[in-house]
Image 1 (cartoon, one colour):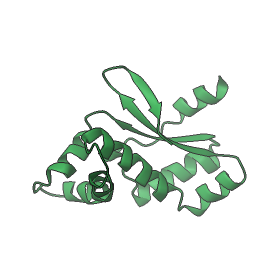
Image 2: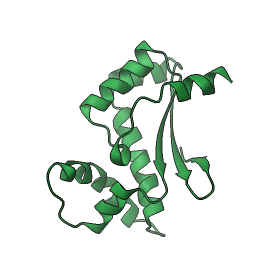
Image 3: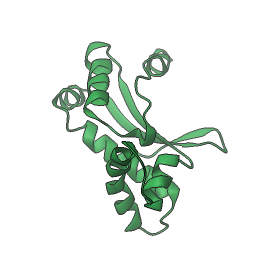
Length: 134
């Protein structure tokens, strides 16, 4: 039980579309390397507005486009699969963001030393449940 409590306690990043920017990567590295979190979960959720906006492909104002650009590769992956939907795009985005996180030398070292586990999850709002997807 302490691992679960510590994991929730160290919820450090909440970003539209779960995108990993350099600033968020620094927070993730700090939370895992310095604070010692043992599990890192990228959690997408049902009906994610940022993923929907990316799928819609409509022009957006200001810096919102940077979020759309970061999610677009996952949407393209989901398009190539059977059952293309918001749910499949959210799950693809979770997995793409995990790939980005795993490029960090800090994260790679922690994973190789069995000090950290990176996982993906999908939060079904209707059921109130989180499903592991990685």
